[in-house]
Length: 565
Image (cartoon, rainbow, N blue to C red; front, side, top):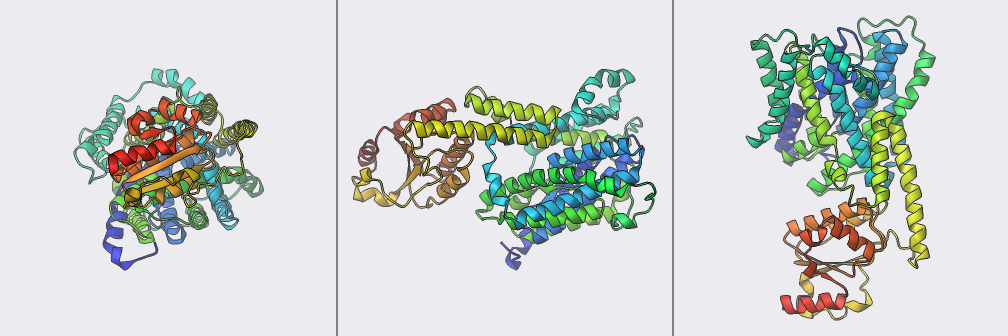
């Protein structure tokens, strides 16, 4: 939906609300990105980078993107990659903050250029082919990384290095002495974020936690707690106009070369993160985003953020949902969110400096916890063993090796397993030519006995072929096409020979959506493997009772004839 003056009130309120939610997250992600720098000014530089990134990306991605209600800014996956780049550059360049800022700016610029390229060559549609176990293991790994990185600031300490370094360094860090005040502030922050929504959801819990715990730290004079420190005021300046930059000794050729791979990694992660958020926004607003235009808009936003030394980011799910729930529907809401953050930077920088790092650590720990896919881990004993192996491999490689490597390994394993499954299906007599063909138009030969009196109440959804990670987007589209005025939906499963974890979750969501609209869901001729999956995950009988599944379509027709006529 383009700008529409009729929704002006909703867009303004949605943008302001999203901006309030984004403020503590922008500060926290920025400080996390610079957490590996052993320099007194690291926290203030990080906070400035986080705010600048949220402003520039938030404004320009909304202006040029393809998801009107999307709110963009620094996110967990992007910050993890940026933090590794910042820490590595600081060490390699012998503590040069100028080199750190240039390196981050170049990586964000390359990220933006790659995303623009992705949009121009229309790569957006291929995100749908990432299997659920790969995404689940990847996002859960990022959640664990965020939590581990915040354990040190939570107790008033500084920590940096790989995940192994952080874990191995915990005993030595504890021996140095932890700040009880910082720990209490962090725990208080976590409790407020978790419990305040039970009081009211109209005020963002993260903002309440930020304000309350900062005020407590000031009134209780907790002097052993690390704080953000001074943030430069005024309008954000481009990299080449910033004061205090030392351009001598910078090897531009080496820095350009070193920024390409992180830029590509950021572009890949940001594109995945953004388009998944776009799908969430579509489901809530019942609209259809333009994935390639969205990538171009994100690319422009990240490139501009890089030029202004801002943190690169992506479409942010929580902030987008807050915007939509508050009435935001057009790109104006995202621009308002960015302008609000700019106003904060111009007017409240003097207050932000008192925020304890342990409070921001508490906020980020709740963010990391929310990213972890506990449902995926809980279902590990029930899903196919191959999917479980992929999920665990991607998870551990993400945490202990590298994010891009994790996704690459996961995709290779998933593709090999899929080729094996496809081969088995063909050898077993199933045709692979109709794998992605979900046809709701052509009646099957056994549907002639449907009573005329109840035809207007019934919608028959025919599914042809396996439902797996490569076909769930099309499956979701046809399930969304079910008219709202029908009372009964019959899902025909005769030709669904296989269902993986991605397909299972898509089916579960589709059934819940139909039932939420007051429709009865019936299922016919469920093949052995899908039946095993549906029963193992308790979709049958908890969502669809046993008596609403039928071995033949004729049996389903007889049931309808006796109950609906």
